Length: 164
Image (cartoon, rainbow, N blue to C red; front, top):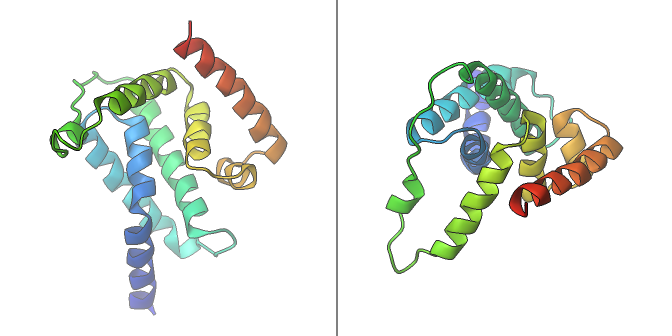
């Protein structure tokens, strides 16, 4: 029984690990912090897995656990010294395939998103992942109407940040 549960968890984690990496990218600025957060989210998912009832999709549940873990750790780490940013994606792509214009746009977007509060970051992240408002509301534990209202406000904030 335990090995079945463990095998299911590993299968789901492998299929959906990009969710965790995206959350880590949103809340960290260097490779070591990214790896630490990835590990912490994986541990929290494993600890919570016995309580996963399957009422929602695994991805929705993983988003919720992952975002809550990241937000909790992010708030604790706000009291620590900042590290120097290391852009690991640059080193993994060859010059021919690399789109610098796209990278600059992404950096601007991530910079603007970094100015948002924790919940707003999570909301934008899920929105950019093409999640519908029903899934966003389930993941964040807010009503669907509240998710829509918050998203409209966040869009306005991002426009002001990106186009001062």
